[in-house]
Length: 56
Image 1: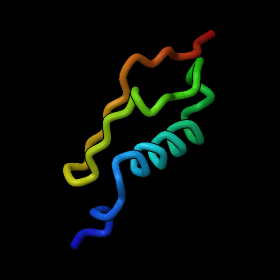
Image 2: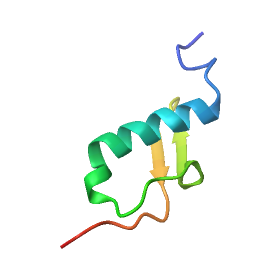
Image 3: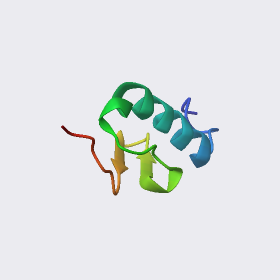
């Protein structure tokens, strides 16, 4: 059984959101919501929708 199998989708999204906010948060105008994330650990993919970037 893979290590990520018992984790629910909400927990996976929260972990990914935390990491994205931690390392890329300075480039984002608003905090990410869980609705903006799609995570697939099995295939190694993730998608973030409707992101507004902070640029000067």
